[in-house]
Image (cartoon, rainbow, N blue to C red; front, side, top):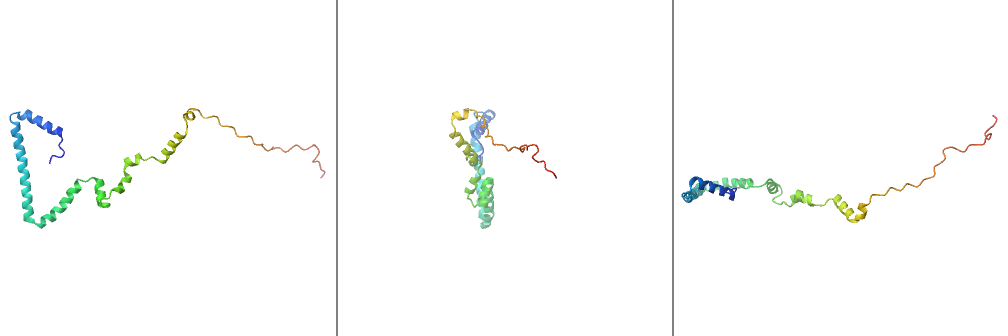
Length: 156
């Protein structure tokens, strides 16, 4: 009945009751409140039994969907999907768990970790050396050698 009532709330109610009612009458008021709650529960249980006795099987046909609805009210969206679509097997949804996905190492992280493990401290501290120049390849001479004067003089 008081499932979401914590100890701090109970303590606050007790202290307020102690201040308002007073320490002499507080135990009697608590007993009266407890008796009233017990009487209300008993009356509700008796009404349920009387209704079930009068309606018989019809009451069960009405009560069953209400019980199912009450079960669904207390379920989380994940539990509803699991129960409805996957027949209660939620092992399929574990592969979509964000905490599990984030804890797994990606391929890029594995490569970086492996590269960090293979390099020594000295290699990481030293600046990269200047690149070596490429070897010079012989370039073809774009100008043909000059011919001797008069070599091409022909009479036409």
